[in-house]
Amino acid sequence: MKCRFEGSALFMKILRKQKGFTLIELLIVMVILGLLAAMVGPRMFGKVGTSKQKAAKAQISMFETSLDTYRLDVGKYPTTQQGLQALRVKPDGVEKWDGPYLPKDVPLDPWGKPYVYQSPGNHGDYDIIALGADGNPGGEGEDTDIESWTNIAQ
Image (cartoon, rainbow, N blue to C red):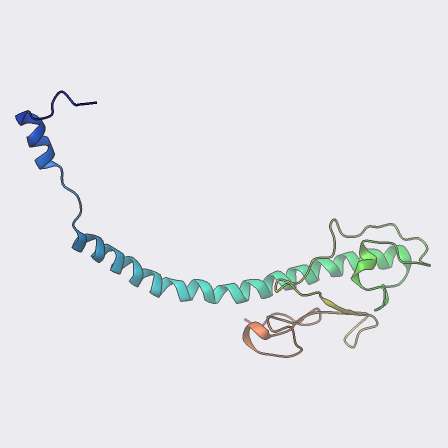
């Protein structure tokens, strides 16, 4: 379909007045955006590790509340063999179980690994540990273990 204004002087003036961005202008904007991302990005990604640690501590606190409710009903905490799964599924031979004590399945830690549960624990009635990003005991930074009996280092 042909435009009826095509070829007219007015149409040609309008076309000449339309301007776009030059290649140089686009490159300058891209460089500025790249510099901003380089300055802000590392600060934001640095918070990912600490946010995962805080999420692990929050989940451990949720387990502690559920474990206390379990103990009130049953009279003792689940054994190491029963594990945290006892908060969802009634263990064999346990009377007075009135669960489930967790609304959903037992979650993995923020790094995708199962929590370590031990009862009786070395630091109380039970110990719950998230082994950090490396999945091994100990470590520093993002590899630090998150434990039920300690606070997160700031």
